[in-house]
Image 1 (cartoon, one colour):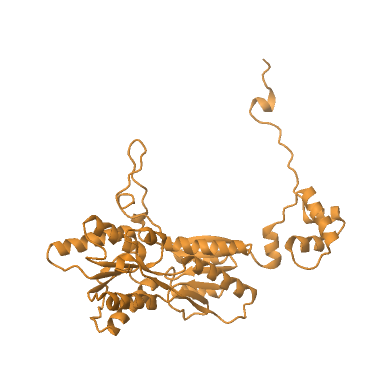
Image 2: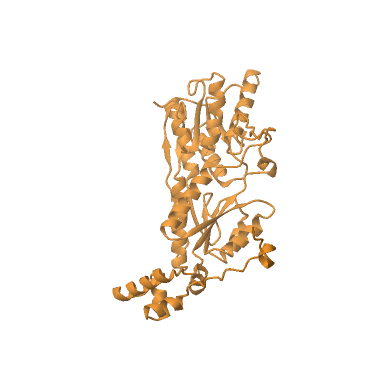
Length: 385
């Protein structure tokens, strides 16, 4: 057997000559046209007659030419990319790695999370992202999704703004002054929350009115007078709006208006379960009667209550009526099905992209404040059949 000698013996082999990538000039030369004509064909802008277009496309195919997105961006001063900034879910302790056994099997609690804290995630955010990505794809754009986690949240948002054509920010993600600062650099659309005072666009839903109509239904149609609000994470714009609607309904109905929510969670199903267990402990200990109805800040919280109440033998809605907000699929398939305020979560993401594209096309357009209608879906969990 002949042993390799020299460079090959040391594991070093002659380099394979690199194949030079075709350029726009190569395409122009092959097609017999100008570089500007090739550019118009590639970008889809300007007039090129059909015969010339076929020559250019044939040259592109033969040479394997791939247009440079960065080069096009320099010419058009656009990246073809939009940014989507989402809020963090909570402290880093909630992001710990799942516990595992020695055999590598992951340990999950009955809440569906790893021991030590609930997993991060939100069906609401997922739907908004899905809608934004779909609308961007239809327009030939891409989306960079960033989660703003402290303490780097503000720096990350500013960095993202420098790499995209425009930015979509979910309300509560960043301080108002940071959003205002970023809006001087790129167009910004705020999703959810109240109408912003700054010079940027806003798309949201009428949180207050949705909850107000829901509470009025519970009292007037079902005769329930002990209605309590289960809040989401403190300070979030959507939760503030929904509690405002709850208080407005109680005031209009002549019922006691609470200064604070009866219970406060964090929008998660796991925390909804924990709050439900605490409520049952108070009731069984004789310290608090069960309410006639619980109006939860979102569907995931309401489904957490439903899990515990039904497991403990309580009838929903016979013993306590239960409602949510969002309109996620889990509420449609639960038993009983969940009464809720449906908001078009995917539609919010799509609308935000549409508004951002309009602003990019004409920066002189007046700023928009768009409220998407909500629907109250009456189902079995409130006593409606």
